[in-house]
Length: 466
Image (cartoon, rainbow, N blue to C red; front, side, top):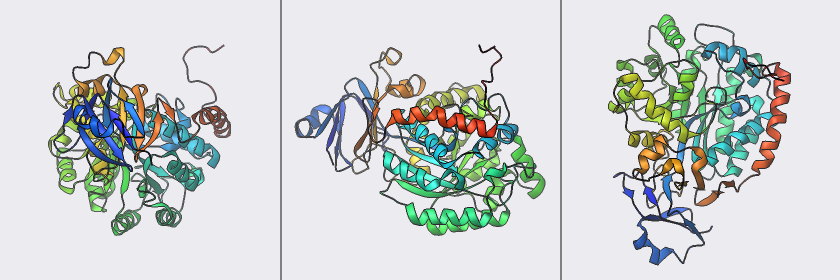
C-alpha cells in the first residue's frame, strides 16, 4: 500500500479539540494516519519520502463525509416524482418504479449513486433498505470493489401498509417477514465486517408495514449481533396519527416501546417530534438522520434540529434519494441544513457552521458506531480524507474555511478522495471503477424501467416539448 503525504492548506481535523491547522499536512502510512500537524514540521520527515505527494496548498482538507440516509435504488428515479406529498409520492410513483426493478438496473442505480457520492466527498454511508429483487449481493460486492465504506440495511417487513393506509405497498416490493428477516441474517453472516468497510444492518420499514412482534424481534437480534438498525420515523403527520391512534404513543415513544432506540439506532427524518420525544432521544443516545432537502421538497416539515443539538441528541446528515432531493451531494446538503434552522426558529444563530460540519463527519461516524475508526483526521485512525479545491471564485477569499465549506462549497469542488489510505478519486477521476460505463448505461436502464412501470415516460413540464 502506497504511503501518501497530503501537504498544505487548511486541515480541519474534527478531533476532540476540533483543531483547525493553517498550512498543515497529513501523513498516511499503511492505510492509517501517522501524523497531523504544521507543514513546516512534517515536511522534513515525509515530503521526499512518501510514494504519493498531494499538493493541497490551495485546498482545505477534511475527514471523509458520512451520509446517514441513502437510497441506492433511487438513483434512476430523479425527476420522476416531483410536486407530491410523501404518501402519494410513494404509492403512485416511487414504489411502482422500485417494484419493477430488475437486478441489473438496481446495480446501475447503485453505481450511479456511489459515483456521485465519491466525487462529492462521501467516504461512508448508510443505505436505508435494500430488498431481494434488487440483487443485494451484487450491490454489496460492488460497494466493496468501489472502495467506499457502507452500512447496508436490508429491509424487513411483514405488512403492506404505511401509517393508517393498509395494503398500499407495491406488490413488487412485498416480502414475507421470515424471508426478509432471514435474508438479513444471511447477509450479515456473509458480509458483515468485510475489510472494515461493509456492515450489515436491519432496515425495518416504517410503522404500518411491520408488526409489533417483528419490530421487537429485530431489536433483540440487532443487539445480540451488535449491529445497527435504521428506520424512517415521524417524517409526516400521518406517522403521528398512526402510532397515537393504534397504540396511544407518539412516534419516538412507540419506537422506544418496541426497542428501536439506543446507540445502535439511526432514526430518519424525525420531523414531527415533541420536546418530550427529543428528551427521550437524548436519554437513549439514539441518533437522528436529518434530511432537510427531502423534508422541504415533500412539504413534510422542518425537524427541530437546533433543539435536538442543544439537548445532546447525536444529529447527523443525510441526502435521502434521487426523487426526493434530487441529488446525493452532502456538501450541498450542509448549506440547506444550516439555512433551514434560522428560518424555523427565527434565530440566525440557531446552528453554526461548525455544528453542521460535525453532523456530516464525526456525528455520522458515531451514529454508524465507527467513530473510533473514521470521522476525524487523527493519528491512529483510518485514513479517510477529502481534499476540497478552494482555488475557486466562490471560495475566495479563504478567510473562514469552515464557513466556506458549509455555505459556499459544493460536491464539484472535491478534488481528491482517500479511503482506507487508498486514493479512490484523484483529480476528480474515480480510480476504482469505470464511471463512463456507468453513465452510458444509466439512461438505457432508466428507460427500460420507466417503460415497464409505465411511469416517468415524459418530462413533467408545464412547457411544451418539441
